[in-house]
Image (cartoon, rainbow, N blue to C red; front, side, top):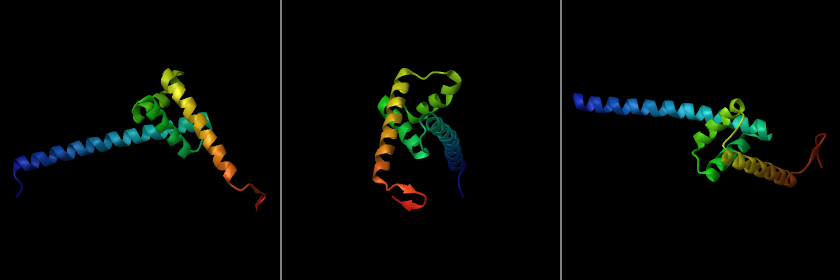
Length: 115
């Protein structure tokens, strides 16, 4: 049988795990919303939006969830921190260029035929 100290330790560990999962769910939702903002502003796909978020985080040395928080609040606040704005502009441009480069490698499709 499990002793009361072991039960208390197990309960504490489970409570911490639940708290971590709750934070992860909130963080994930925030990141998804930020991807939507990036997609709207940049005219990008969800995958490109994710790449833009990661790039902004890496180039500004700001945690991804903080970048996401700032981007989600941006429409209501009307401004972004300058470093985030510069990095976002550069990352969106990079994503657009990458998309244009990848399109050049794909065959053109017109009216159901490869061209």
